[in-house]
Image (cartoon, rainbow, N blue to C red):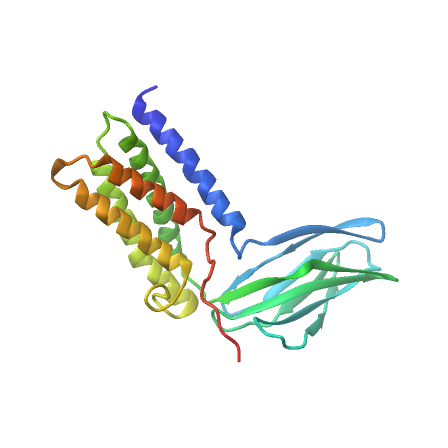
Length: 262
């Protein structure tokens, strides 16, 4: 197998691992778990993000008709008293809905299930969900695709630069172009649709999603400048690739937009 093909395979594997890590460790990844009630296992899946103008549905499959439930919720972060919504039975499902919040508004909530004298609460620590505006697929899909491709080409450029015979110049410029368009053009548009602001990173805020995109773009701008005119500058490319891998491994939406409730 040719060297180039091997390096692309390695870059793809590293990118997939990093993307999976980022997604599964992020604050918007659903909370999954199982509780035992009435001698049966009940599997629960709670969303931690809701887009659009609708309430957030909470649905749990519980075949045992003797089980009832409710959802306790309050705005986050606050110390407000808990509000409680009874869950209604819809065949094999118990269902309720968290009230819609403005973009960047958060709620914390728990599900409480009851069967006779048995009571179960899930999760033990309340799940926190964030509301956002609707982002058109025509904007969101290219953004997500380009950020994934940016990380992929970045990894490939770094691997190319590690070899003594490689020349990462072209890959460095391609990486910079992809991150610039996907992260610094499409990214703010997505942010505007979702949370009403184009940019909430430095110097306007501490949104890690915006800030890490900026860090990666600056790193690749430096690497591209260093390899201009045919220069190799391989260690600058390696540094940019490592920085990009590290910042994009940071869970998505950490320190994201959030309403500070009064």
